[in-house]
Image (cartoon, rainbow, N blue to C red; front, side, top):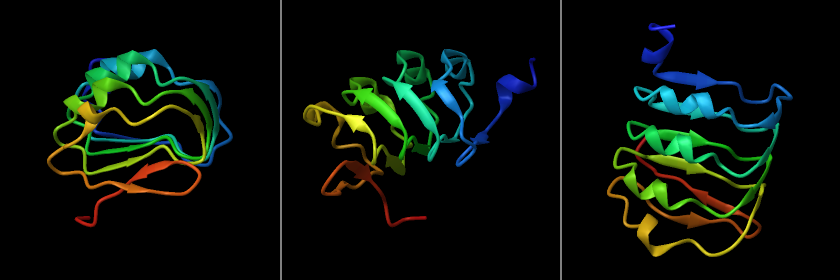
Length: 119
């Protein structure tokens, strides 16, 4: 288990994963890239993900995630890419989330997606 806590990247994109995002991901504080896109994940983003302050990439796009974008995103100073498009996320984008120093903002017409050009 100790070695798992040092994981830097998880990619389970397009694997038909259902249910909610596991709160145990919040223990993986060395995580730099978390790609959960194109699955069938639901409910809101768990607050435990706010512990992943080393994240550079967070992709939860194309799921059934609901709620609002959490304020803990503003703690992700290393975040270069964030994708929450194609979900059921509502509300406005809190001004506290920006300006993230390494993240530029680009909104798609039907959902929120934030990408950078510095890959």
